[in-house]
Structure formats: structure tokens, C-alpha cells
Amino acid sequence: MPPDAPSPHAPNLHAPLSLHVPEPAVRPGGNPSFSDLDIPEAGAVRRPEVDVAAADIRDLAYTLIRVLDADGKAVGPWAGSLTDEELLAGLRDMMKLRAFDARMLMAQRQGKTSFYMQHLGEEAVSTAFRRALEPGDMNFPTYRQAGLLIAGGYPLVDMMCQIYSNENDPLHGRQLPVMYSSKEHGFFSISGNLATQYVQAVGWAMASAIKNDTKIAAAWIGDGSTAESDFHAALVFASTYRAPVVLNVVNNQWAISTFQGFARGGSSTFAARGHGFGIPSLRVDGNDYLAVHAVAKWATERARRNLGPTIVEYVTYRAGAHSTSDDPSAYRPKTEFDAWPLGDPVKRLKDHLIARGAWSEERHRQGEAEILDEVVAAQREAETHGTLHAGGKPSPRDMFEGVFSEMPPHLRRQRQQAGY
Image (cartoon, rainbow, N blue to C red; front, side):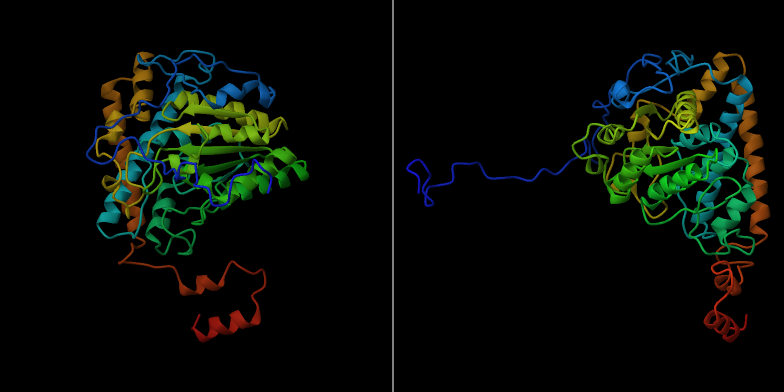
């Protein structure tokens, strides 16, 4: 043993190791606080050219792109891309999604369906993004992007029939409620296995490029699911092959019972994870319809011009429960949404349109009533085809269909034995 080496019997001079366990700033019963959220002034963040190099916009992964200021005015370089008519359509999309949510949540409480997931507080993210896409583009969503369908004109009755799993369910009872699917509307089948859609979106985008097509893909994931390995695998492939895909991360602050700190790890933002892969990354106010749409147009244009992938983090807040199986009061203050500094996306766009003279409080109340009538009428029609415990159901025959182009003999025998 060298003369200066410590004796194996010498006492340990190091302090004991300890494990770091992330903790949210406030627990139930405490006063909500978002003091750690750095919010720049609306219009303060620069807008780079679409073909900018990833290394030249590293700062955009740490700030927050915002357009609407406290007075409801659209300011800065990301403003001005939408007409009054387009903004009114966006407001109606969000109002319809909110009314749809309320009716379906009530239907679940009445036992008409087994399960439902709200979008309350997040309506701007999916509805504004959908308006930036073109026909043929494909979304690979999670279970909280129904706004993609509503803003794309998908029938409310079909959505409700899927939730009820009734005889007119477009998916024939093969999916859980709210796990919609529509190729025609660019909405890939939702999977209950978290993060699988991220690698699927990148693969779809790569296939589009291989075919020399013009269609792009959009991947969607929640903050909690970014801890899954599929998230990182998707970034590797997207970066390596410069796939024409927009990689969306919806940071709504909470997974089903854990705050974002667990999935975020040591990174200060989710968008910053793109830096290690050389992917341009932006962070946007997810409750600002104009900002979401502007960033979506920027990112989709990059993909369409064959400039590769973009990561977009939407900073928003899940105001409702994670699902009808969740009680958020067990892990966060009940008044936390009231303290959320980025406000209500519906109110913010409404106030903007009123400030522009394109809307009014009276017309807004009238619009709410009209939309509620439309949603209630759709619900009544959907329920004529059955609900969870009453009325028509998909045929058991359907479980044998739609898998093989030619049904194998053993399944044919099973179907016959079952009487179908």
C-alpha cells in the first residue's frame, strides 16, 4: 500500500449520501404559488426565420412566447396572423370543446359511460394547432386532444357514440371511451400505453418523406409521459432522419398524481430536452390562442419545407381532474387554477375580440347558448343509439372483423361457434 493511501480501517470522512425526491411547491391546504414560473411580457420574445439553425434559438426553449397582453391586445412579432373571422372560429372551437366536456362529464356521473377526461383550461392548445394543419396531415394524439377533432369539423354525435360504446360507435366498442380514431380527420388511434404515439408519429413522418409526399405528422405527449423511453427514442429518430414532424409536449403541470418535477428531472424546461438532439425547441403560452397558432404555423412550415422536426412545449394548466377516476384535491390545492397566472384561454380570446370590436359580452352569452343547444342536440341523437347500460350495443361479430384482410380459419370457426 502506498504511504499516502488511507487505511482501509480509517473512518469515512464523507457525509452520508441522500436521495433527492422532487416536491411540489404547495400541497393541499396550502396557498397556491407559481412564483417559479418566469413569464415575460407579451410580445417580448423574438420570432426567428423558419430556417434558423437550432443552435441559434437555444434561448427560445427557456422563455415563453406570448401574444396577448393584460389588456387583451395582440402585440409583438408573433401577432397578426389571424383575421377576426378566424379568431371567432377559434373561440367557438374552444367554447364547443368546453360545452362538450361539461355534458360528457355529466353523462359519466349519470352512469351513461364508464370514463371521461376533461380538457378544461387546455382548450387553446389542440384547437389552435389544428387550424395550422392541412388536409392529409396526421396527428398522433394523447387522450386530451379532442380539440383536434372539434376544430377539424368531426361530428359531435360520432364522438359521443364512441364515448357511449353504443351501436353507432365508429370504433365498434374496441376502444376505451375518449380514445377516438379518424383517418379522414388526421387523428391516429389513441393508445392507452403512454408515449407509444411519439415513435409512431416519427415513423409516419419518415414514411411520408420516403414516399416524397407533402404530408407532415404531429406527435403529442403530456409532461408526465416524457419520462417514458419512447419519448427519447422518437427524438433520436426525428433528429437523425430530419423527419417532417412537430413534437408537441403539453405541460399542464400535473400527471395523475405527481407534479411535473418528476418527469422533467434536472432539466429546467421540457423544451430544453431538444438541445441534446439538435432539434429546434420553443416554449409557448398554452393559454394564448394566438401564440399557440403562430408557433404551430412556424413549426409546421419547418416540417413542410423539409427542414426537420421541432419541439414545442405548451405551458398550460389542467384545471379539472386527470380523469373521472381521479380526485386532484388529494395532491394539489383546490384553488390552484384560480391562481394560475396565464388565465383562462377562452376568456383571454374573448377579451381580445371584444377589444378589437369584433365581439361583445352579449354576443358571447348568445354564442354560449347556441353552442350548448348544438351539443345537447347531438347528445340526444347519440343516446338514441344507446348508452353504457341501455340501448343498442356493437355486435359481438365486430370483434372478429377489421384485423385480417382474409380471416384465418380458426377465427372463422370461433365466430361460427359463437353464432355470428
